[in-house]
Length: 384
Image 1 (cartoon, helix red, strand yellow):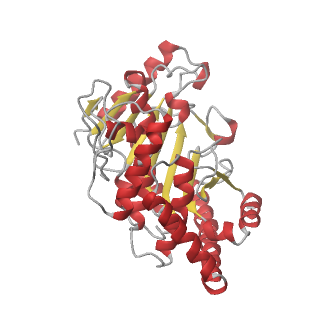
Image 2: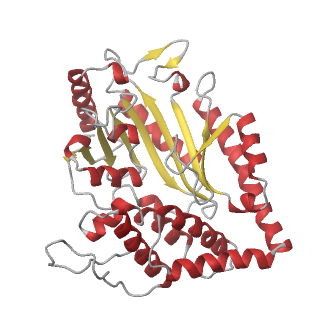
């Protein structure tokens, strides 16, 4: 095979968003499945120990490996220092990069930091993050086995071209000791509103912790829980095989999904009026609001997503709600508006976008939010 073509700094369009249209198993409860592998290259210092020249050397080696790789096909390639702040944030909002990749400990974009995404498959890798390489995939719904298979193929392909740092006793070596061994971090972004409403969530979360799982917010470690969305992942990476870790996470998350379904049945049976009131209040506010913060929007979308899943609302589709969650973030709104937005403007644009997405009205421009030179009085906000 001839390997891949690497396209430098292509325009950011819908890259990395194919999972939004993928109605995977249990997609009404599990938004997405992610699998990441941490890998480092022999002969180079790890993470923060690497000098700028060593990071550049790693970047060049990774580019060469990408060009030879068969699994990826053609690759879009962005070096973080060449992107403006809004584009870097847009990639973060799509869960394609981490905060560490776009913003180093000193507040500057790290030298040599880059993102590569396959054009034909839902796989890619971050370069010069905490580890030299973070191989990753993101799929819609509950698809741990498939996601693991995808990233495992990428790992085999890249590993034939770059010598990984590996110890015969400990396994793959990583910057953080918690990732040593397999280097595997698998997670699902799961929606658990019924467990929250029935006050069972703390018991379930504590049970997950006792069985080796951990949970975080929407953007991973250190982020806040909003909208009853939890990112559940494995804690253990050492002393187990990748297949064992995936099987355990799949089994335990499957049990959590079962608990959530039971809680939804209880709400429908024992508190239907309370449930319908919550759902329709959320729909009413989002359908008429003129200003929305991101956190308020997420909390209200949680109610609508629950209502759609329980057939209390006929529209919108669950996939539409997931798309709104991505496109109503500030960097995406700025892309639609074609200008920077302060917090007040962003809240106005967000409300307009969500309102039109939910009600199905034709897209209208937002008055009084155009460019400073007055050439435009608004920009269309489309659900694309």
